[in-house]
Image (tube, rainbow, N blue to C red):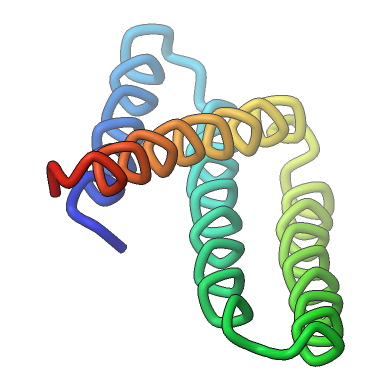
Length: 120
């Protein structure tokens, strides 16, 4: 995980905690869990893509398929666990996952553009 990813992960988490403290809405803890889940999902995806870039096509497809089902199982496990123990958090969990995916993708795109320009 790069420094910019870590900063955006911690900054987003702190913003969610600030919103939670101002609104006194404890169900936003689901958004924090979702934000971390989305971030972990995206970082896992990028790590697997980097590993499979230099492989043969058949091996890369097999590894990508296995990785996809692992990531899908991870997200399903998080959603099922939250749904089992805290049903009220499901909406904020979904919004947190979406927010985590979007923020981490934006950070990754910015980092890639900087790398292409030679600014890193």
